[in-house]
Amino acid sequence: MSQIRALATACTVAGILLGCSTVGPQTIRSGRMAYNEAIAETNAQQMLMVPVHNRYEEGNHMLAVASVTANVRVSSRAGIQAGFGNSDNYDGNLVPFSGGFIYEENPTISYLPVTGEAYLRQLTSPIPLSLFSQISHVLPDPAFAYGMVLGSINNIQNPAFLYGEQEDDPQFDELVDIMISLTRERRLYWVRGSQDGESMSLLVLRPGGDETVVKMLKLLQLPMDKANDDRIVMPVTLGLEDMSENGISMTTRSLWELIEILTASVQVPAADESSGMVSTFPRRGRVGKELQITYADERPDSAYVAVEYRDGWFSIDNTDITTKRYFKFMGSFWNAALSESLDDGTAAPVLTVPVSR
Image 1 (cartoon, one colour):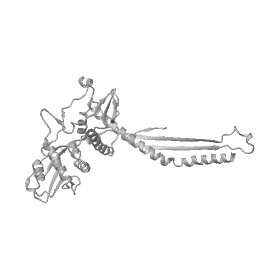
Image 2 (spheres, one colour):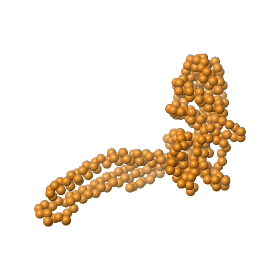
Image 3 (spheres, rainbow, N blue to C red):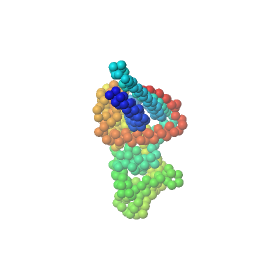
Image 4 (cartoon, rainbow, N blue to C red):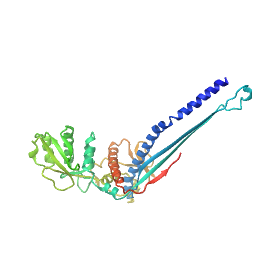
């Protein structure tokens, strides 16, 4: 019986030691997702704090995660005590099996303060037409991106804020609907210039006097003589300068303007608003009317992202699809701006924090 018990114990020890050999792959399966989720969650919280701070006219400071290095050490030990001969000599005095398992994870996280002229330039520069066209092209409903990013198309305005008796121009929605309709029919394309790779044009295929194309040309105040051609090529420039008779002038918002639009949607306690502690905004235009960052004393259970600040919680509700979509797109543009500014080579020194557990 003692030999059988010893054999069983030996098998158990071997199983434990064999199991240790698979710790590495298991660490990747669990650790990679955990780190990724933690970075994504804290990025969203950090981004949400920016419009909240802006509402209170406070400065913002951001840290980018430059690198995460996780060193994992796993060790085990096992021992067997066995007796031979008459069991009366060792029963109760031996430990048949002993062992131990040690797991150590020592991540080193490097943070990079996001500051400097390059970052400020990325924040305040208009979003490039090339980037906007790529994002709008892959969306199932690009109308939201048009309303969010474009400030004007030729003389048709899409203001972020409405002053006095100003109202949203219905022609903007009408023009966007036509452009999206032609895109879905595979008749309108954004085309990048072949020489410099930066200039953009809108290409309309098979116009053939189509009423939709004629209506688009009228809204853009472009000549009608091209409506019956096989194709129409309309050069697009970023800015307000005059174009040729067949060209289109567009303005895009900067990331800073997108932040200001979201800032205007931040709900604050009535006491803070009446005391003059927070900034005020004019009426919001079409893109900002439905956005909402709510305030509550407790963290909402249905929060998509939430931050604790000033004895309360600011959050975006998980069922608020419009604000979630805006926040997601803004995050995409923000990540592009961060990447450009960090690649500039003028970033602040790296802050490295070792953590052990």
